[in-house]
Image (cartoon, rainbow, N blue to C red; front, top):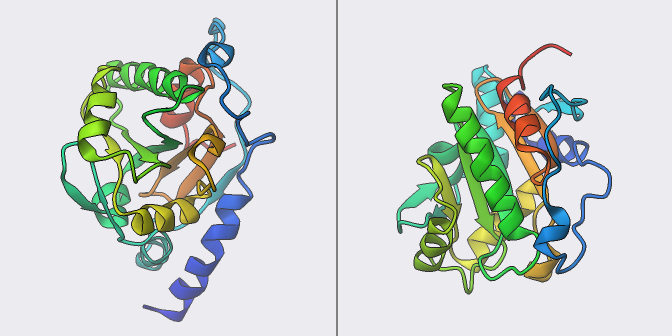
Length: 222
């Protein structure tokens, strides 16, 4: 790897941390109904969260992103293994959130909300990959996650990811999603376009129209 790429990789953690919205932590065991998305306004636009470029189109930028995000192996709800950056992130537009299947609080609301976002984007001809990474890998096996995903009628290109506790913890650390206990997870939603290196951070409970708009226009000049 070129020296510049190594330096850039070291800066990605700081870059992602700066994207955190205020009040990033979810209340413990918050009732799902308390987090229901609000009715959408006539316009689906919203103030754009702070953006940061991490990685990018150059070979050096891509190498830096691969070094930071890593190619740690995770397993999806169908039992298929994926190298994290190479198999799930590279050259894709992605939405990433954190959840666990036995959650009685915000997780069902987040998942249902993102299912609406996925439907909106598909109707607009926009292909986006969604990654939901478990914060409870010891209990969330691929079979459990497959059953969980089926409750929300999710479409293609949505991966519910688990793996060994060590592998999951390593990926969560890189994304700012690691917690001591599953019910302490955040409601963060990371939106990124790894073909351009543009990332932003918001909440997975934001109105679906707003999230779809952000995903479609993540590369627009401010």
